[in-house]
Amino acid sequence: MNGESINGGRLQGFTLNIVLAIGLVVAMALSLAAGKVWVAPSAWWGNDLSALIIMELRLPRTLLGAAIGAALGMAGATMQGYLRNPLADPGVFGVSASSALGAVTSLYFGYTMAAWLLPAFALGGAAIGMGLLALLAGRTGSLILFTLAGVILSSLAGSLTSLMISLAPTPFATTEIISWLMGALTDRSWNDVKLAVPIIAVGMLSLVATGRSLDALTLGEDAARSMGVNVLRLQWLAVLGVGLTVGASVAAAGIIGFVGLIVPHLVRPFAGHRPSAVLLPSALAGALLVVGADSAVRILPTVSELRLGIAMSLLGAPFFMVLLFKMHRELA
Image 1 (cartoon, one colour):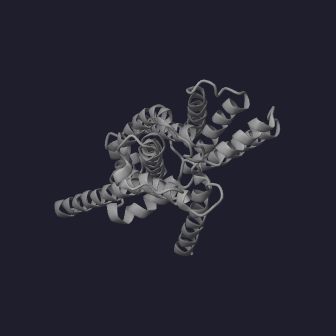
Image 2: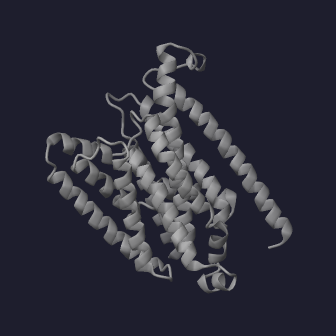
Image 3: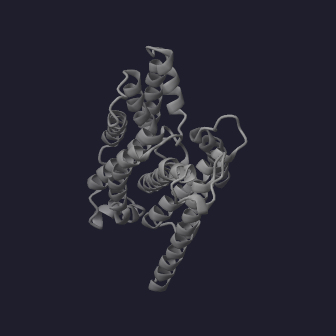
């Protein structure tokens, strides 16, 4: 690849990031206005009820949605680059299920009085899940081992979560667990933003640090080692980054699936196929997708608000099936 092609790719990626950033700003403005009751921008500042709704309810919800979308988008792009598999996603490999199990454990035992306990349990579950994946894959980062470990991890975490639901001490605990597992940004406050966003930021910094190593890894592990890439360090940076981003996201909003699967596929044709070039656009597109979807579930003419996690599953499952059919045709 000559220098002109590289510069052209960088210019294309820069343009894509600008377009996505503008789209995100527009989506966030729409998110502030949207709801069962629309609030015009002229009423966002003041001392009346409309301004209070914006500052205390919709603004933290919008910021948290953007942070979670960015985190899940970048985590998905990192896993796809690391595993060299376009179907890789934190949810597919059991990370979300492990994090959810940790949070459900907190809800099951009633550890919700302290605001930091549920996020701590969710992060602990994500860390254990990613740690098991990394240990099972060893130094090779084998896709087969990661996939098998993810299937086992998802199955085990899902079974234990179902067990806790069936053995919940009170009907209120059961309702709380099920409602939380559906995933939503409803009634999120500034406290949720303060808890989740710093952890997400640290996780995303770890993921950004994998960029150049992921590029080298596309040539194969042996070639990457010959180029000076420490594969074990790369693996643990990915483990740390995905664990923190997914754990904080699940702790703040429950399970919101398929974001990490969808957005890298949408931006890759425009950003280029280098894993490092896909990371930032995936974060911006993930934020745009979650903020837009959250606005949509608020304005739907339903009696109660549709859960964001359900909406993303309804969008993501068909997308996943289309990808599978496309790969099947290419291999046939």
